[in-house]
Length: 77
Image 1 (cartoon, rainbow, N blue to C red):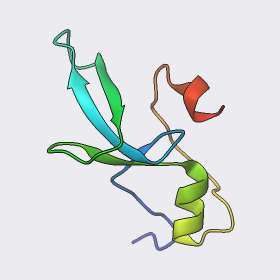
Image 2 (cartoon, helix red, strand yellow; image 1 turned 30 degrees about the vertical axis):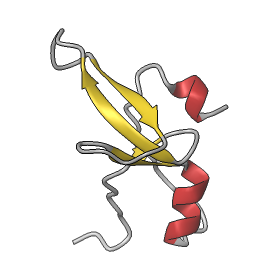
Image 3 (cartoon, one colour; image 1 turned 90 degrees about the vertical axis):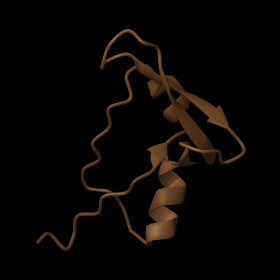
Image 4 (cartoon, one colour; image 1 turned 60 degrees about the vertical axis):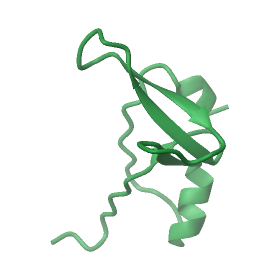
């Protein structure tokens, strides 16, 4: 019902590639990710913010919700 909202099933990273979610076994809030150049079972596509904007043809992003817990430095470097 919201034509100007897009939801993407991708991971935002500082370079394109693939991310594997790793369960450290210490609860629901302790998952981490590992970067790889190759797709594999269970991996999700990693995209950059610039790449996401260019691919979608958006002039800009008004609101971007991120839950990145510790990867801010890599993403915004």
